[in-house]
Image (cartoon, rainbow, N blue to C red):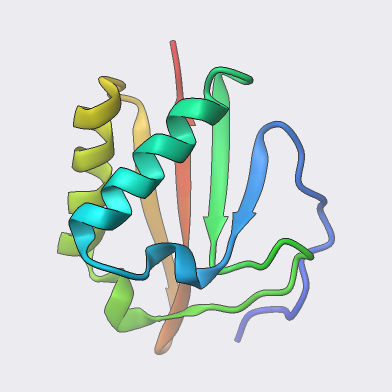
Length: 108
């Protein structure tokens, strides 16, 4: 079970995204993630998203079924291709039947 609130505030590197950020078809999610990351990487060479956490730090995990490895690998490679940045990593963190998704992007 995850703690209910993360106390670290968002900043230029760390950003929380609600679980609804992964709602929709995979192509739509890749487009949304690519667009948002593209903008944010202009402000900072490193960006970390924690998907499954609300803006106020409240943890709202996703069902583990939405964090299947083939789906997450598709997100990772799709965003890498759209942005032309190889250093994008999507890492699901699953406990029992729910989890969060860490997305780390490094622009070199």
